[in-house]
Length: 380
Image (cartoon, rainbow, N blue to C red):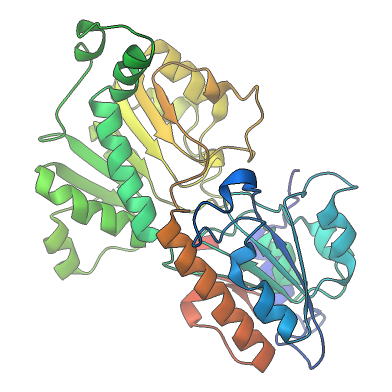
């Protein structure tokens, strides 16, 4: 479902106008209707008591919410005019979703949801919401900042090694009963001595750089904000102000920037053509940062030596998504930020914000993505 967007300049004007409709930022007294959209776990739901991020276990907050008289509707059905989400939106006060099975909250859906006050992301990354429309409607959007940064950074390090070592073809050989060392070794490399650059260097990017330092890589980073000198010294990373100067230097590129209007389609055919031949790319940020067909073409020609990530456009990825079938990839469903440890953190963070919402209290400032008509800096 495509999102319709308003330009940032026009939304800023709206936000400062006295005509902006601001919905009540905190809960009034009485029962609230909370709708949660999560992925379905089926037989896996009962295999781990801490598996909270699925529809069946619903962040572990059902009993708590219902004991206070609130209504809690949970579903995985989020697409199309007759889906469960559409049925419950008109009288919902709070919508909880995750980046792993996102409920795409368009301007049209916001218009239908007359009672909606609060949009919570159980995890990190709220680009499944039309943030400008949310700001114009006076909604509050918040996420559990920091809840899965360790999980994603560890996953990125794993993917770098999987690509460089050409692990996936070797694994496939074994499960297919084959043994052909040459078929793997001809494009297998050490990480030591390689130049690794991260596009975006927030919490995840910094953790990744810290974990890469012992591998004796040449580390580069590009971000809108330069790191504190002490942290820069600790990581050993060099700041690159111009992303197009940094990228051609890299043997490995890791995407760690949010999806915004500036980064949507950032890696198009022309930019990819300027990268090193055989570059490895890891993207756990958002699939729409890449031009889908440009990645397929570059992997097919060998210009991209390997592509790995767990983010797609759209999500869930349809069966005919071309990234499923392109050569030299190590793609997975969106799993990097939904480890059991991360689920415990983002479930606890969601509950904390709901408690504050019911009491009329502010959230931790870093959790806000839209507050009082203003977007967080990373989304401007």
